[in-house]
Every structure is written in C-alpha cells, then in structure tokens.
Amino acid sequence: MAEREISQSRLYEWLTGDDDSRMCKDIPDAACREQPHNFFLHLFAALGNKLADELSSARLVLPWLLGVIGAPLWMVGLLVPIRESGALLPQLFVAGFIRLKPQRKWAWVVGGVIQALAAAILALLALYGQGSLGGALVLATLIALSLARGLSSIATKDVLGKTIAKGRRGNLMGWSGSVAGAVTLAAGGTLMLFEDRPGELALAVLLGVAALGWLLNAACAARIKEEPGAVEGGENAWSSIKLGLRLLRDDRDFLHFNLSRSLLLASALALPYVALLGQQQSGAELGGLGVLVVVSGVAGMLANPVWGKRADASSRNVLRDTGLGAATCCLLGAGIAWLPGEWTQTVWPYAIVYALLVIAHAGVRLGRKTYLVDMAGQDRRALYVALSNTLTGGMMLLVGGATGVLAQWLGTASLLVALAFMALAAAASAARLPEVEQ
Image (cartoon, rainbow, N blue to C red; front, side, top):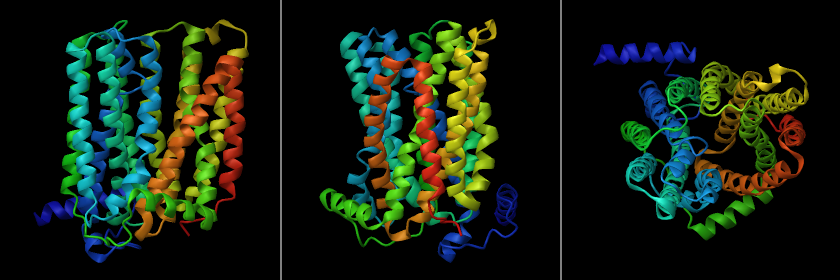
C-alpha cells in the first residue's frame, strides 16, 4: 500500500510538474495529503463523463436516434438547446441545496447515476421507440439527463475547489481534457466505420457504453476523499436568486467575468456552423462528420495540457487569447468559403479550421472554469458557479436563437464574420479582467 502511494505521488508530481505534492495554498492539510489520490479520481471521473458525453452527443448521436425511430423533424432542432440550457439554467436553484451538504461529492454521484439511467433509457428507445411518442420520450429523457448534468456540474467544481489546490486545478483540467480528447478520437474513428446511418442496435450499444461512462464517473466521485465543509449560507431557491442579484450588483469583477463569458459563447456557437459549412461545400455526409470528430479529438489532446498550464499562471490571459483565436478561426472559415477553387469544395480545409477552433474553444472552457473557481471564495464557490452557469444558460438560449435567425438571413459564412466580431469583443473584455492567480 505504501509503495503504491509513493508511486502514485511520483506520477502525480510528473503530471503536474510539481516536485512537492504536499504543498497546498488554499485547502486544509488533510485534503492536501489526499491530493495525489484525489487527482487521479478526478481524472478518471472526467474520462467517464467525456466518453458518455461524446457517445450521447446532442449534435451527433441523438439526431440519428430520432431519425431511426421516425420522430418528426422539428424535434431535432430542440436537442442542443435542451442539452445545454437544461444543464445550466437550473443551477442557481440547486446551489443552495448543495451548500447544505457537508460533503458535496454525493450530489455529484446522484447526478452521475441519473445520467447513466437516462442513457440506458435512450438505449432502450433506440431499440423500441417509434414515431412521435418515441421522439417525445427521447426529449423528456434528455431533459432529465440535462438537469442531472447541471447538478453534477456544480458539485464537481465545488469538490474540485475543496480537494485540489489553487495552481493545480488548471493542470488537472488540462490533463482531463487531453484524456477526453483521446476518447473523442476513438469515438470518431468508430463513427467513420458506419455507413450512411447507424442502425438501432449500433445506437443502443453506443448509448449503453455512455451509461457505463457515467457510472464510472459516479464511482470515482464516490471514492474521492472530501473533508466536510461549512454548511452555513445554504439558501432556498428564492434566497439564492436574491443573493445572486446582489452579487452581480456588488461584485463588479464577477459581473465583468460573466460579460466576458457570454461574449466567449462565440466559440461554441461557431463550431457547428464551421462543420455545416464544410458539409455544404463538400457534400460529405457521415464520413465528413467522422473526420470532424477525429480532428476534434486530436485537437483536444494537444491543446488542453498547454491551456491548463497557462491557466494556472493566468486564466485571464487564456480567456483573452482564446477570444482572439476564435475570431481568427471564424474569419478563416468564412474566407475559405468565399475563395474559388476545387480545394474549397472538400471537407478538409474546414476540418483544419474546425480543429483550430476546437483548440480555441478548449482554452475558453478551461480558462473560464479556472478563473471562476479561483476568483470565488471557498464559502461561496458553489453559488458563484451556479449563478454564472445559470446566466450563461439564459444567454445561450438568447444568443443561440439570434444566431439561428442571422444564419437564415445572412448565410453561414457571413454569420461566422459576425461571430468573429463577438469573439473580438470577448477578447477585449477579458483583457480588462483582474488577475486571480497572483
């Protein structure tokens, strides 16, 4: 046992570049002693979560599921908004509940188990669902999955702040993203083996593996050694709303961060439009989508460890630089679409832009997570995360709807130019944020 702990500590120190795993800035000594053990549990939990996310993707797998069971076409348009906003909007309402629990990992476990059950139900619907009723059941199950995802999201960040010290969180999330990128690569390679559309059994298998991924996530969370925390300050939903509004009014840095985060939605909103542009120009079907998933996995593996180390030094600079990177990618994608030549009629130039945008978006995600966890005090970290995510969920619905209208009016390439200006505004806003890692 002692030899295993020494080996684990050495591997931890190699991964983090830290020659003393017992030095901690803002967590108790007891939590510091367990940090190498908890680091790897966080890492494997992230692996299970990412595997499940990819194999139940609302942008890839669930549209095929609705097509296989013969659901109405309009239901496909509800998948991504439900998945994203359903996970973000309710978080403020459950933050107070989580705050009342001395150990927040059990809320994370509950969220993981519910997501696993939802994925298992989706697998059954792939085999037995039919028509409008089957589609309605898919959407209802997706709502439950998304709400559970929101519960896990708050608890995960709170447990992260209690068990991993400042200066190492970005590194952890960077390695998690790298491992997740490898999983995405494997998922994309598998999808490329399918023909025009996977059958019912193939979809059921994919969703069954997703369920196992969330069970792995929940099992790792349950084994994390979390010291009981303070329970003072737990709020009911209405009290949380009032406290959240006071925070936005009184904490100008927090308000500024949420403005920057909302503008940085440009990177997330641009990704499907770059993929769509590649399909429009090349006419590629599933093979083209498989290529995009593969390049996404490679980009994630390469980018996340680098962003993680940079975020631990200055997450503000990461947000600024990724805003500039997202703007460049949007302009590059639009420019390629407008250029003449047969080479612009293949999926590959758009796949390269997509990979670069994935790198920028990975930095956005990792930078904002690190910034938020580091700026929030330990006593109100769950509330800060929940409030920020709730605001972002609302903005996602508003901005996502607006971009859909603009895409219909302007066309895909012109929309990317508009998103480039949004990303430039995000970079300018992020550059003025205060440092939180110093």
